[in-house]
Length: 352
Ligand SMILES: Cc1ncc(COP(=O)(O)O)c(C=O)c1O
Image (cartoon, rainbow, N blue to C red; front, side, top):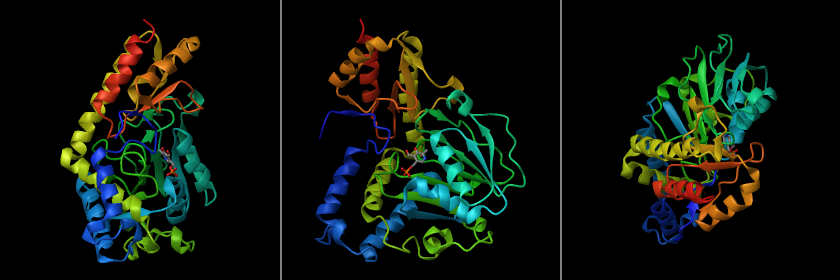
């Protein structure tokens, strides 16, 4: 369709064949002669889509049988609140590693007692705190696996004495994760999963039903589970398009292959940042993200020239978030290595 190198932070690049299959579903869904946009979500064809999407997520991520997979609206931002609503009785413990983690803290405070166990705010979130202690009297420990805005990533997850909850919005499906270590994982789909509009929630059934407050139906995970993720009309088209993307992930080699590609892309770009005197990475090396690579152009007087060079090369979406400045290249699953090569080539040659 186009030759644009799409480094957008989200919504972001999807594989061409997932886009084509989504378009085909809009034209003629499952041979019904109708568009996926105009059929009942309770019809057998769409119910089959939901079940297939759950099955492929279960397979790709290795989700154990005692976990449910839900497709909800409201974005990852609603999960900040839902997690606390459903799980916070005494205290929620949080790791504050960026803007989204801070938002999770803020929303949980509407519900109850929150303890920030550790924070990297002191250095503008350029690292992941280590050596913190998770309080044993907390109901859960909430962390954010990848910090989309600041470009840091948890390289491993703590052995938590309490239920481990993780916002994996910006690195889900990019690396192997042992789901059985978590009580709940959630992710807005609009990076590695699919288009915006659906949030994937993977929840261990046994962690629910333990808080004393009444939970309104739409906020209640158990209600969504009981109604097989169709308590209300689900985000039909985002789920359908997500399935097309997941089929592509499976076809090209699953999460293992995504992990290999993520490392190849990130290593190539960080190698250029570290060897090119014109640029500096903003995150401590050991905590660097493979998904969102943040860097500064040291001499800001060259900005106009650099911006022109990457735009001329067909590169899109690398302007840094306003809270960090500089540049952020998002290297999600569907980004081909040749797009990183194009960016590295611009960085190497633009001021010579
Ligand atoms: C890690 C993380 N958490 C949460 C969010 C918020 O997601 P949403 O816009 O779906 O509410 C984002 C959005 O980029 C994110 O990157």
